[in-house]
Each structure stands twice: as C-alpha cells, then as structure tokens.
Image 1 (tube, rainbow, N blue to C red):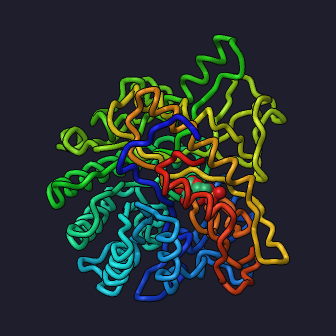
Image 2: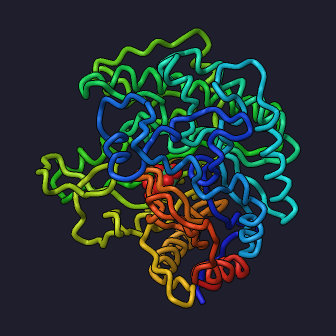
Length: 477
Ligand code: BGP
C-alpha cells in the first residue's frame, strides 16, 4: 500500500481527442479538418516536422482519422467501458467542424451539436464528468486554405463564435473546459496547432508568433465567455510539458536548457495564466526579428481572460545541450533534445521518466500557484493479443503506476493537483504517426495500421488494474 493521499473528488479518468477516436469524418454534415488530410505512418511524421505541406488528400494514401475507431457510432459501448473502470472524468474534444463545417459560417450545424448532446448525456447517465477540449488539432481545413490558418486575424472571430456556441449549448452539462490542446506544440508543429505549414525554416518566426498572438487573444476571449456563460465552470489552458534537463553542469548547457524551457514550456502558459507577455519574450522577439501587430484592447483582453487551472500533457523529459551532434538526438520525439543516458525509452524512442512528472508538477505549481490537471500521460506501445484473447500489458501498468506514484509524491510536496486523465484510455490513431499499432488504451481495439480490423473492443490487463486504482482513490497501485 502506498502512502500518498489523493484528494477526495480527485478526477480520475481518461483522455481522447475527437479526431483520433470518432471517425465519421464526413458524417452529420461535418466538414474536413487538418487531421483528415494527414496520412498515416512515416509520411505523417515527415509532414508534421518538415516544411512545405499542401493540405491536399492524395488517392494513393491511407487516412486513418477518417474512420479512426468509430467512436461516432460506438460511443455508448465505449462509455459503458469507461464507466466499468469507474471513471470520474472523461476528456474529449469537440470537433470544431462538426459545429461549423467550414469554420466561417454564421450559424452552427445542429446535427453536430445534437451528436455531442447525446455523448454528454450518455456520460452523465454513468455519472462521468466531461472535460472538454475546445480545440484539439482539429482546425477547419477551409480556414487553413482560404484564410491561412491562425495567421489571419479573422480566425479569432470565427473561433469566438464556435466557442460561445458550444459554451451556451452545453452550459448546464459541462463544467470543465480547456481552450487549445498543447498550445505550445506549434513551436515545433505549426500544422496541428496553428493551421499552416512553414515554407522555409528561416520564415518560421514572424508568422508563428503573430498567429500565436491571435490564438492567445482567442483563448482569452473563450475564457471570458466561459466565466460569463457558466459562472461555476473551470476553464484551463493546456501545455505540452517536458522539463528540460541540462546535459551536464556546464553553465553554458544550463543556460541553454533554461532558455529552451522558457520559450517552449512557459511562454504560452505565462500569457494564459498571468495575462501578460513574459519579459523574456522582449529579447526573444528582438533576436528573431518579430514585430507583433497588437490591436487596441488585445492586452486588456489577455489580462481579463486568465485561466482557472493549468492542464498539461506529460510523456517524457527532455535533455538539452548547447552543442549537439546529430547522433546525440533523442529519436522519435518531435520536441527534440538529446538522449539521456539515465533513462530507458519506449518502443517509439520516448524517454520514460516518472520522476520528470514530479519535477514538472513542482515547477508548474511553483510558477503559477493555481490548480494543476494532468490531462495526458500514457505509454504508446506494441501490444500482443494472445491466443486466449488476453492482452497482458504489464509494461503499461508499470509505466502508469510509477507516474501515479510521482503525482502522489508531488501532492506530498505541496502541489494542488485536481485530476488525472491518462492519455489514450482506449486505443486510437496516434497523433504524430497516424498509427493504430502505437497503442495507449486500457481497451484494445481491433484496428491496424493498414486500416484492417473488426473494431472489436477488448479489456486489457491494465483495464482491471486501473479500475482498482480509481476504486481505492490511488491507494491500491
Ligand atoms: C499529444 C496529443 C494527443 C496524443 C499524444 C500522444 O501530442 O495531445 O493528441 O496523440 O500526444 O502522441 P502520439 O499519439 O503521437 O503517440
């Protein structure tokens, strides 16, 4: 028995994203979004990390998000399984293009709104709270192609209309919200978060930070609307957080790690929690020749639209040094860094570092002093379906146990932690590689990288383990 005490009412559960589970990509009047034009496999990883993507669908490519795991038609079955595990909370995004198919319409799509009414009612039937991600890498393709994504100030207005529409529609049903999934990831992956592809590396900075300004203003608008429409709600930001370790005690490497941590881990969170651009950005803007166009009232909006909690994803830590050789690189992970000799890695080369989660929780709480919420954490792994139909994912149980222990230690350290929705509570499409074989779930889905499979769901060993964790509020690990 461990010694940690998780708070009463701790939000144990699981996390997903509409584009990675729903499928029904063109059903119910839904419009195409960015995920719908990302092929699976290595092609996707290259698209997300290299310049020059044209957002076109190619007949010879396979698009895994089109059917995903068909949650769109199977949500009752899946929600019953989440309830069997005892979920208190279920994190899911609302697909922007189910509500506004092109993104720039004046009126919403009632079929899309009605779908999410059914999903939320099903969750409530089982006593599960929904934690809504308003935008999870699902930008309307029309806004990308016709307006240039978040580089265009008009998208702020379209987003505000979308956010206000769903806040009003679900104001009596949803009290936990967050604005943009991993808002800081666009620093390395602008396609997902900002809806444009970089043409030439040297042109990255000006468009990225002007787009960020628009998105941060939009986030503040959504926070203000949420507080006005649903006074008792809690709305958070959502950061991809990987603590940056200096490779050694060389002060140059420590300074390099500090600078990387500031821009990647803290820039977006500082604006959304404190309501102002942090002063370290003044030097960053100067050094990267960035001149922001800030409209009248924007800075006041940022100040008024600060969040109630900090949601974040944690998968790994990152190790940095100033002078890197190519073969130093930590492979498999989009945020970069060098291999850490003290850490094992997953099947996809992601460092496994539960202590890093405790470090992250302490860093974030010390910086912001508002409640934290771990809204993504999990192990993507190859799972083996045994002859008898069982899936003995002890490696996933070990990974999750150690990370839950780290959260318990952080609470003991004085961190105010409100919940844990582990990532990929059911197998789904991997965001960075478009693979089904990169499995995260407590529930196995019979779907494979070539699109084959029956979509049958099966409970893994971790399903029963996590059920006990929730039942004992983290006592039984
Ligand atoms: C985060 C995303 C999730 C999820 C997770 C795992 O970036 O917020 O959508 O996909 O990463 O990454 P992957 O699916 O690439 O293994």
